[in-house]
Picture (cartoon, helix red, strand yellow):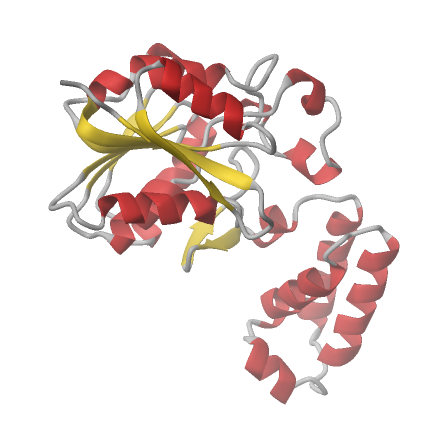
Length: 281
């Protein structure tokens, strides 16, 4: 079987299983088993797969046909140009979160040696990317669960990010020390109803990184109220939010005295980030 034949077979099987983005995923799988980039695949598309590659392809397709997440199968995923290790026990970085990253970087661009607190850090994709983009930033990442912390540590090392890692429970207001220019979080925000109707792939991800309480807003309420005192005057609190949660989260910020409250749309026109400025005088 050549690379081209393997690609076509992969597409056919994924499409028949109802994998929505089967073309993109097939390309990622072929890149993974061959070690080739896009240009090399085009140059070598008539090259036969060796036995190991064919066996690997068979195993990967079988896993994907039961909707096991492609990111977990491959074991790493790109976010904002950085590579992050992922696997069971940690939330997969998503393109949606790059909207929040844009807000963070705009917030910090005029700051000298900014202090940043990343709550519910997971893989560390937000805090580690901030450190990569702003090397002078002092970044602290807070995560509760050991499985996620193991990936966070690997990702910090992999991306050569000198960040502070703290095991702490955000709902107990742990991990903060001093004052910050930015407190950012992509917290669990799926409500109780939607938790029972998740896409199959998402059910493989940890429920602790998804479930945000009955209405999905538990973490926003707690963080806005309890962590506000750790912001410098004029500091910013920024969240990723779920679909149609932007108005509710903006209201939570308003109720807690935040000013200049704004939202930012993702590439699909969904208001995905909500942020506000602290007036702590």
